[in-house]
Amino acid sequence: MAAKEKTKNRTMSNLLVTGGAGFIGANFVHYWMKTYPQDKVVVLDALTYAGNKANLDPVAENPNFFFCHGNICDTALVEMLLKEHRIDTLVHFAAESHVDRSITGPDAFIETNIIGTHSLLKAAKKIWLDEGLNKESHRFHHVSTDEVYGTLGPEDPAFSETTPYAPNSPYSASKAASDHLVRAYHHTYGLKVTTSNCSNNYGPYHFPEKLIPLVITNILQDKPLPIYGDGQQIRDWLYVEDHARGIDLVIKNGQLGECYNIGGVNEWANIDIVKLICRLVDQAFVECPLLAERFPKAAKASEGNSAALITYVEDRAGHDRRYAIDPTRSNNELGYEPRETFDSGIAKTVNWFLNNEEWWSAVMDGSYQSWIKEQYQVTNPTLGASK
Ligand code: NAD
Ligand code: TYD
Image (cartoon, rainbow, N blue to C red):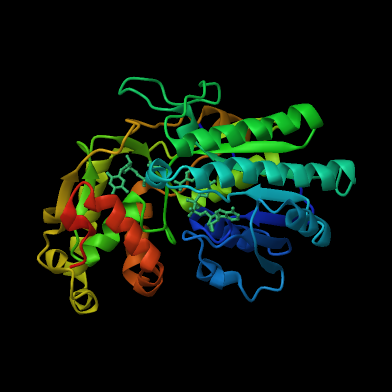
């Protein structure tokens, strides 16, 4: 049986959240400001193609919220923020995060994920350790991924915290490098760090280049649903708010210098997820006939036949076959368990996209269109073409 979630008395905190305008960062900021309304939260975000200030609209008017448009590679800026806001907790989400983009353009991944993480570590060491501000009570929490462990066969045991690192994509290699730097700053300088390695997230504000939001928004636009290879690759999906709560527990109760795997115990083959989403969208169109008026392009959904859009395309280079998380450590030490079931989480997510067309249409700007065209025309010319 799962241990009860561990709690600890806590005092007010001043947080610096890097990448807080991205998918998981923004959900984390919403979660944190709801859970700890007395805390100050400062977001540092470069607003790359994946960052969107509108993701932070729900907290924008909160007097405890501050936004800084800037780059984590700017060490002087980070030092200034740490001092000016008397930051004691840095939660590091900022990253280039899309595997496909790391295959076509790895340089940005090296720059942000490795150099950028090192820039943050240097600034944190200088202000917290060398200058002594919050020397005893600081925390650097690094948000990483299960992809650093590489790939699993169908019968392999799930990734635990002692699984050797074996990253296969430029994305996962850059995240692995950043994990090692974080570890080294703890062991060498005594910086108080923790790391979480999480499985695939899904939920509101998910940028529509990733599988789940891409499929939902493509159905609504009557565009093909691209399945790489045979579609039998497996991912362990976690609702994004459960990730935020997991990070909270690691920050509160995790051991310094240690890593915690956070997962959904929810393995799905890609093709099955896509078919499930098709069914959920079709069902929504049956239950709410107004949707056909709101999404006039969604011809297949209106016919209850979104699955006809499924299109197999060439596989991703070096595609990892299976990811799965062994949750034993986070369960035993932190009392962590996901709260959202996949049924409820995916239904909420489909609903969120049905109700937030304005958000996803706005992020599908020129640079998004160019990415989709470049990424999918290679394998299937109809996917890049606009209908
Ligand atoms: P995302 O791509 O949606 O958001 C990344 C954010 O970082 C954006 O707001 C972007 O503007 C910002 N950013 C990028 N480069 C920056 C820079 N140099 N300086 C400042 N800001 C910069 O990513 P996400 O899916 O929200 O992932 C967040 C973190 O969680 C990443 O570190 C990722 O590796 C990790 N993670 C993601 C998943 C997942 O399923 N998405 C799973 C496990 C771990
Ligand atoms: P993605 O959402 O990019 O996450 P990650 O690569 O970090 O796991 O992809 C999830 C899975 O879906 C992965 O196995 C690749 C596959 N996929 C497709 O089959 N088609 C697509 O168009 C995309 C974007 C992903």
